[in-house]
Image (cartoon, rainbow, N blue to C red; front, side, top):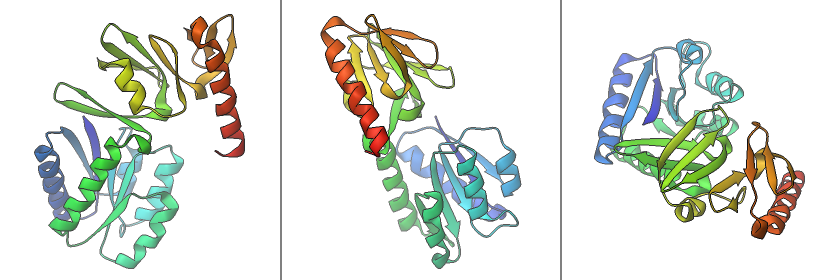
Length: 238
């Protein structure tokens, strides 16, 4: 399920956004959970995890831009969409990596265009996130949050850095296509995120979370080469 927050000090605007967002995702057959906040203080105090945040710019202190900076500093790496009555203010959005902005009063055509681009970005592997489906539920998992993927029979187990494990049905060949260069198939049952490899010896990869993953004999040389390439990329900003 996609978790969405709306933060606006006007109840009317919250109602409009809630209805528009719900209608859009219902048409796409994607379930969402929408949480509403009448102040930025309440949003910042929330311990919920959100994938998408709609944030009013003109609010009492802290305003939308200040709130966005605090959210980013606190680790929010989801999609941020500003809602504003002043189009010229959106140039500040670049600083906080905002996805887009919506101008009040909300225009249906612009809203739908923004949401279609947002959905495409979520589904696009180049956006560094994985969109997975379990029955009627959808979830967005950032690549950076995945330590490794384990495949048992036809089921994928995503081991995340928050120590949780998400399971769903997929084939390792399909999963490998959805991931990027930081993931390496070291064994027929494992794809590991090279970022979290702490050490390697005796055909075993030691990960930062304490888990150990086997590296097949046939993949040993490729694994070492992939690690060296990944380290060089990180060092030189590639």
